[in-house]
Image (cartoon, rainbow, N blue to C red):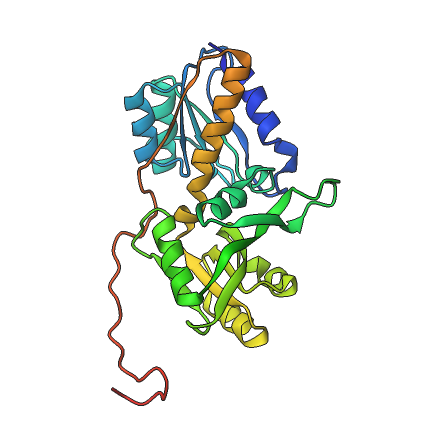
Length: 286
């Protein structure tokens, strides 16, 4: 069984910290480098629910995608939710490690896992890393469906393929337009709208799309948009990361037991469909 420092080295090989964005906070958050690790839990969010799950599981490492302290802190007091997470983990001997934008840019990365969940054949990154001669690393991915489907059907397909959330998947564009080529970005992706337009894809699926950028995007170019829950677009990475860590463990003979959290930590918990007050084609009151 490895000690935490050995496992940290392996994680840094899979998702090098130097490839994270300059504003990001990745790598170890807490944990004794000399402590032995034989069980790992992988989750999207470092929240109390996943901390408690790691403790119940008997894990010595919680590997997450989202940073706990993205903007830094001067206190880890347990009277704050984030501090309570730290206290829960340290008290039970559980280390915390973050792989965020370094996992986004990786090969395979977060968007590869998203594309795989949607059944897309990846053809390359949406925003390639300039220092990657193979052209495989970078933000987002571009992929193709085996057979085209209309936008409404693809939205339903995405909603069924991704973990269930209150939001589901919403689409912008003609519901009947054909979709074959798709750009995806796990997590917040409206900063890549221009890239998706330039790529000439039929549709762009991501999360956290805002009204004005989405409206401008569908007006400026024939690209359909699909907006899924942030957590749901990143959760497939947990299973991908588990498979990668299993392979590392087997290669080193560590015998790690790697688990994926299926706890839904998306903050939205309910959805009520609107009752149309206007005819969507004429704009006249119903």
